[in-house]
Image (cartoon, rainbow, N blue to C red):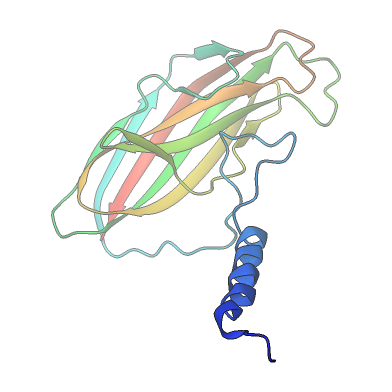
Length: 191
C-alpha cells in the first residue's frame, strides 16, 4: 500500500514561505535604537522641474529648550504650502542656524551629547520626517553654525513644513540646554 502524499504537498511550500517571511520581515528595534529616528534608506533621488515658489521663515531671537527626551516643534518654523489638484511637486528644504549646547562636560569627549534636528511635513493631521531620515545630529559643539537639507515629492493637498529638535544627553549625567539663534528655514517648491 502506498501512502497518500497529494494532500500534504502544500505543506512544504507553506512552511518555506512562513520561514522566509519571518526572515525578511522588518527587524525589531535593537537595544539602544531610537524609535523617533527612522531607519536608513540609502541613496535616493529627488528630481524636480522648474521652480514655482521660494519661501522662507527666519528668526533672529534665541530659542532655548531643556532635555525633553522627545522631538519638540521649533516655534514659528512652520511654512504652509499647497500642492494643486493633479500635481506632484518637489520640495527642497534647507534649515540653518547657530546652535549652542550648554552644560556639557568640558572637555567635550566622543561620543558627545548633541542637539538633533529633523525637517518635518505635516498634512492631514499626520507628521512625517523628510529625508535624510536617520541622521539628525545637528551639533555637538558649544556654538557654531549648522545646516540640514531635505527633499521630497508631495501629492495634492495642504501641508506645513517645519523643524523639530531635541537634546540627547548620552551620559544622562548633566543638565543640558540647547539654543538655536539666527535660524532660517527655506522651502523651494518645484514642478
